Length: 116
Length: 113
Image (cartoon, rainbow over all chains, first blue to last red; front, side, top):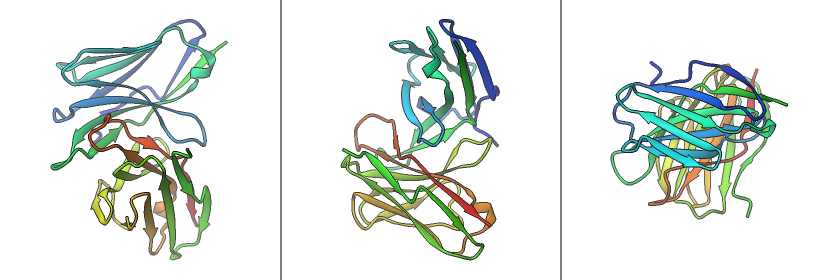
């Protein structure tokens, strides 16, 4: 049973327009949500996160929105640039029973292509 | 600073062979994690470690063993490789009490024939 779902395997957007990537989750225990970006043959790179007590977090061109009642989050990239073309993973986090080590549960990813 | 490095980058094994994947970090992070990524799926946690000498199972631990003899190194072992273990393996680290994000290495692509 997938606890974190990214239902769109791919998304194409024109350069300069907004990219919106979506993610749904089922487990109410998650207390943080993260977005990672991944280029081919590289490891995932952290992009932005949001606490479950917030509904929006912004960092430059990247904004993450969280709707707890709908168990839905989205990543907005404005304006989109060709260098943003990558696979974007949504991840949900909760703390293991002791200490601050965390379980990250990933979605299956969305391939974003930004067309020049 | 190299960050998180993984050795080797690629490997092909025959069924039944064994191997060890090495993750090394110079970030002085306490927590280390091993994930696998399969096509069309997200990363799944295999094992993790909260410090030198300690390890714990993650979501998909069967067929793997790990060791953390030194703080900077986290080893993932396959004692008897199976084709189902064909995957890309990623190591990650996290700072105790710091930001919640994990920092990933570049990955090891393993093929078991």
